[in-house]
Amino acid sequence: MEKQLKDLCIRAGQGENLEACLNGYTKPQIRRILDVYGRKAVSSAKKQELIDAAEEAVRENAIAWLEKEENEADRTILREISAQPVHISDIGAFSRIERLYERGMVFLTESDGKAQTLVPVNMVAILDSMDAGEKKKGTHPFPAREPKAADRNRTESETEIIRYAKALSNIYGMFSLSQLKDVWDINHNRGIAPSAVREAVAKAGEEDGFYVRDDMVVNTVLDEADCEKIREKYVAGDTYYYPSPEVIRDYEDGPRMADAPEYTYILSYLGRKTSEEKAEQIMRELCRMALTDASASELVEYLSQEEITFLNLDELNRFLLLYTGWFYEIRVWVCKGYKPCELTAERLQMRNFNLSPGYSPKSRRKVGRNDSCPCGSGKKYKNCCMKKIENR
Image (cartoon, rainbow, N blue to C red):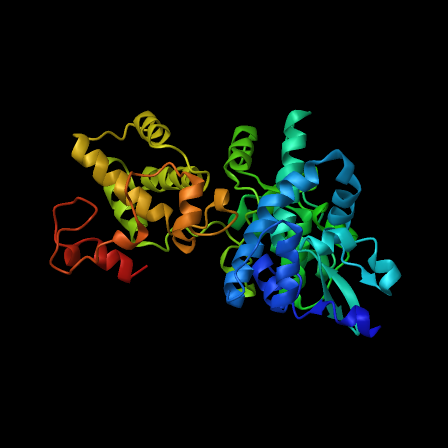
C-alpha cells in the first residue's frame, strides 16, 4: 500500500460508530474536519472534546449535505460502499470518495494490507432514514402480503443467515438487509456477499418469524400501521444495537419478555383479573405494544377490550408505572434494539417516549422481602412474586 494512502487508514472495523472512527485520528486531523464545517475549537481542547465536537458537526450536517440535489452522486457512492466496502488501490482511486472523506462521512481502514472504505453506522442510519422518507412520499413500502411457505432446501450457511435474521427480527422489529450483513460479518469475523444474504432470506417463510419487503426484514407480528409507527419514531442518525452471538441465541425464539421483574408483577396482576391462559395472551400483546411504544391511552383501551379494568386512578397509575419499568428493560423496536435503560438521558429525551411523566430507570426501588408486593396482591413480597422470580 502506498505510504500516503496508508497514512489515511485508522484502526477500526465495519459496524463502528463515528466516535470510534474519529478516535483513530490525530488531533490535527480532527481539527481539519471541524474546519470543513466552520467549527472552531480552542487550542487547549482535549482530544475527546474535539471528537465530541466533530461527531456532532458530522451528524448535524450529513442530512442537509446528502439531501442536496447536487450531491446525489455522493449519496449514491455512500450507499454503495456502505453495502459493500471497496478497496482503494491508489491515491487516484481515492478521489472518488475524497469529498465524503474530508467531511468525516467515510473513513479508510487497513484490510489485508490494502486501504478499505469504512462507513460509520451513524451514516448508514441516516441513509436508511432518508430512504424511508422517500418511500413514504411514494407508494407504501409495505403492501398487503400473502403468507409464504419456507423453502427447506437450505445450505448450512443459509440456515445460519436465516437464524440471524429471525433473532434480529425479534431485536429490531424491522431492519435492512445491509444491517443483517453487518451483524453477521462482525460476529463471524469475515464478510459475506450481499447476494448470499439476499438468497438466504428469500428461502424464509412465515414459520421463520419474518418476511422481506423492499430490502427490509420485518417481524411477522407487525402490520402496516406498526411499521410506519416504528419508522416515525426513529431518530435520524441513530445506530442499531449490535448483538453478540450469545444475544442472537437468546432471541431466536422471540423477544425476551421476562427479563425484568415487572413482567412477573404485571402477569400476577392480570392473573387476578382473568384466567392464567388469558393473562399470558394479554402479556404477549402488551409486549408488542411496548416494543412499538404504544401510548397510555392505547394501552388502557386494549385492556378495556380484554375486560381488564382498574378500580381507581391510583391502581391505574401503579399499573402504568410497572409497565414503564418493564418497557425500560426490553429491547425496544423503536430504539433499533436498544433497551431504553441503555440510552443516555439526552437520547431518551430526544425520543419523546409515551411513558409515565418523570419516570427514570434509576428510580426503581429495590423491593424488600417484607415489603408489600409490587403486583398489588396485598401479600408480602416474599410470599408472592419473589418466589415466582426466583423460580423463573
